[in-house]
Each structure stands twice: as structure tokens, then as C-alpha cells.
Length: 132
Image (tube, rainbow, N blue to C red; front, side, top):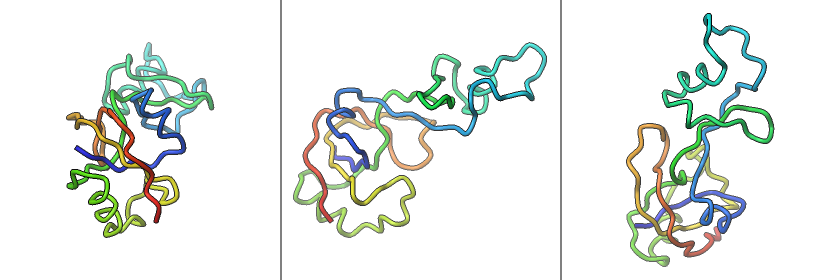
């Protein structure tokens, strides 16, 4: 199965194989907690996941780690058809896509309740960069 993914480093994504959901909650700044509740418990509850899936990013904000990459499933089964399919997409309506950094990945879809827009997938190969 093929996937479209916007990224600055496709090889790093392929090797790492995971994505994060960003939050606007900075570690050490949440002061509206219930009695006994920790920040990480609050953030996990906000994301609807377990505390084991919550990390603090380099910028100090909480993130939810996902067990795959976020992207968009394509109907195409080869690179040439995938490029044509992307040519016909309205990329401006896809908020998480930077049209200058689109790569086409091969991989396997993962069922996930945490991905609101697009698809979560395990990458196996980068087929190439989409040049618009």
C-alpha cells in the first residue's frame, strides 16, 4: 500500500517509524490539575491515551507518541500512478501537508483511534519525492 507524507527527512522517518501528536501544553505550566493528578495524567486524558504514550518534546511541550507515521493512504499501487493521483488532489485543503516536502512511502496501514486526519502506517520503503 502507498502513502503520501509531508516531511523534511523521509529517511529519518523511515528509520524511526513513528509520529507525534503535538499539544499546546508546556511541561511545568499546567496549574489547573485536580487533587493528586499529575501533568502527564492530565495530558494523557486530554489525548485519550495511556500515560506511556506521552513524552516531552525538545521544545518542552507534551506530545503523544504514535506507533507509526501519519500520512494519507493512496489508491495507487505504483510510483507513477501515485504521482498522478497526487497531481489530482487539492493539497491546500490538507492542513498537515507542505506541498514542497511530499514523499511517497510504501507500507502497511495501522488501525488507530488517535489519527484524526489521514492514516497511520508502518513504513517499509521510500519510493520517492513528489515534485509538483
